[in-house]
Length: 332
Image: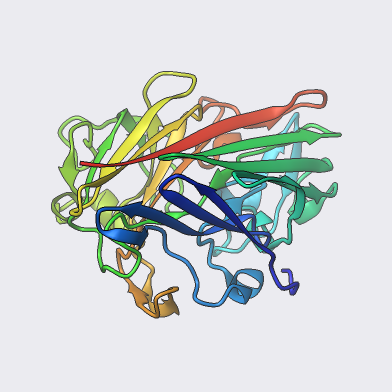
């Protein structure tokens, strides 16, 4: 955990303003300017110092390993590694002191981009190898681009993502039940009651998880489904169709604003923010409550090191982890 006052970086392009903090390399603000004026469409803490103390993942860069690791351990080349457990006996988003709780260094910046860097030493949270990570945020008219890199001096596992919560009607506008979501995903990975993948890859056909056509979130979340009960809504990894940089999701608010996400990652964790209970106060002074925003976390599969048939999260010495995600914003 960092106690350093975070530095705020503002990136601007025509119609967009993105605020990034050095604490957690986090997105705090994304303001869209259109016929309704300026609308901030991401959830964020009222006090920037909260990101350094107890950020709750809002907008943060997640690592070393995004999502969950069963029993807070994994085996790599025959050797078992125990990492810090922070969700019962399991590890979530890198453990007790994940990348979201670190003070990142600004390596380079301009008016429309910033590159932040972090060094994670060998054994950090139990993960092998010293890891050097960068995340670059870049804005263009109607577009935000996120580029990640990582390199290690010993074989390890890596799964980086961003944990921004979106509400396209405005961060102070209440539940996202009126948003429509479409995913390019024919399958998802079901979980047990601890939200750990069972290892199954299940066809979405005929389930509450068939979001291949625009679907009203409130309607989808109201369905009677054991998986929805486990997550108190959506908190599941979807298997993104295809490979390379391709369509992942389209989100549409009641305002007519749309967010189209592309990524080269194999999965996307869709989380509808069931945990918000009014204790987190947003930038406008609004207390965030259940479903105040939706996270669309482009990523490798959760618990991948413990499921050999999942896409590999292994990073070998001499390799470079590189990943790209884009957020394209428009208005109907």
